[in-house]
Image (cartoon, rainbow, N blue to C red; front, top):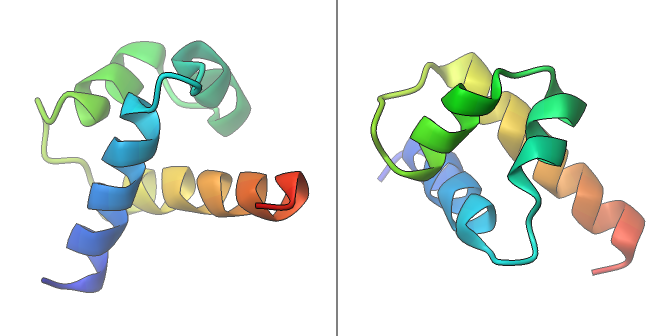
Length: 67
């Protein structure tokens, strides 16, 4: 596995978490809601910039929540 694959796996796991509000993630990252859903469901092969933006969002969320 490479870094992008690892990031995508983490992003998809977080998006599938029942505590994750997908619409909030889309709004907070400036991404289209349907794109976030397709990434969550593995329906698309997203570009690096989208994966990185979602990954950075979840890492920042972890650091502010104290997890």
